Image (cartoon, rainbow, N blue to C red; front, top):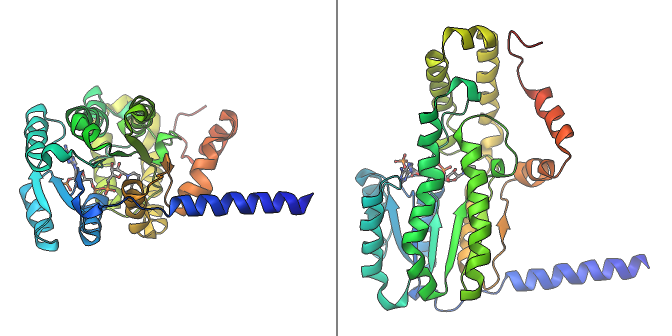
Length: 317
Ligand SMILES: NC(=O)c1ccc[n+]([C@@H]2O[C@H](COP(=O)([O-])OP(=O)(O)OC[C@H]3O[C@@H](n4cnc5c(N)ncnc54)[C@H](OP(=O)(O)O)[C@@H]3O)[C@@H](O)[C@H]2O)c1
């Protein structure tokens, strides 16, 4: 009986492995539009897909970022500046994409642009702090997607949305986790709506990786700024020791952040080039072994674990 079970499990993994290795044809003719290509995963993915021969349309927030990327890639990579918080900028980029892809349509849209800070206790922040993050990570992604959907549908292509493990497990305050929960929800509804048209939607949920976004220095600066802005009452409730302990929480970012960025971009590439892409990818040992499993645990257990690791405010009961 056990042997039979082992054979069935083995067969399942063999079929899965075989399915996942099948690659779509005519990759050299396919256009992929990526947001947030100035640095991090976006920049790496643009270079990786360029080496693979795809036609990369890379959107960068700044002209300097675009220039740097052009220096690192072949002539086939084209760049455009795009601020995903600005409707005019999105409309201009969508027009730019349409002029390039024409009747072929857009094979891939990778919604990668994002910001994470401030990430502090919610009480230290203002509404505007939340709005700023949601505008980039969620509303920007939605507007870019809506603008390019006709072109993606035409190609029966792919939408790849970059979420995070914190889209499954709300670990800290601020707009970041909220925005990534939103990305998960938007992507799930989009996948179901677009499947009748042959369009596939994949969600990337990376663990923690060392990019500009996870820079401990930037984390500390933004934490300090939010602390200074919080009123004297809030500062008294939390206390300087809490702030110091919270800042230390940013320190471990240094070591586990050693994960290789290609773990993430390989998943994005698979989502764009495999005949049978996965619905969700969770690159990184921390996401796979810790955060995603934790997201399935009962809430009281998750609360207890997070409570155990969190610093205590000065006036906590
Ligand atoms: N690193 C991680 O541990 C991690 C984990 C899970 C998920 N993610 C997600 O991965 C994605 C890429 O982040 P990353 O880690 O590669 O960090 P990153 O290097 O900071 O990349 C983010 C990119 O988005 C751009 N961007 C920021 N605001 C923008 C705006 N308003 N419009 C257009 N582009 C904008 C940034 O441009 P500038 O460089 O010019 O600011 C940058 O190119 C994000 O969605 C992030 O949430 C990252």
